[in-house]
Length: 211
Image (cartoon, rainbow, N blue to C red):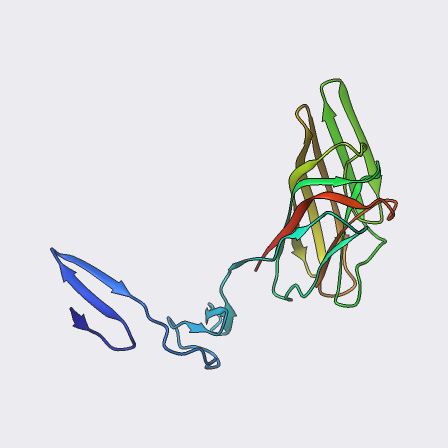
């Protein structure tokens, strides 16, 4: 075993060179030199313009049991986020009102200005519902439990586009799309219902976010 500088080690065995990178500091150093990395809970490098840039990463929040209440919030989403994935499993409510995903800045979620249509495909046909109050997820039966994902992506500035696919019974699937321009930087996501009064009574929900 031959020791190298900067906490790296190299082992030569049967013609194979192996390298191990050891991070020895968590102190931000400003703009790292070309080819260098910096770590302080996040990874940074130097971009093509020679500026300090954060490298892409994926963060999973803490799953929330959707077994009570009329809304579930995820807050503190960082400003660098470009994509949010909402995941739900075994999700059920007490009524027949469709689900809504609402987004907004630090102060509060926004409840107007959405373009969103969701639908259901069944063995006998299709149905759909639209909303300007949030990104819709079609649901019309209190006995249904939903599984699926909804993706919210930043297309430019504070404008976000939405796409959803899911399952609610063995023969029924859901899909939706839409967009929304937030007044300022997105920082929170809420799951609720169109009428705002149906309560969650089963399942769990979580989000992933990435830059």
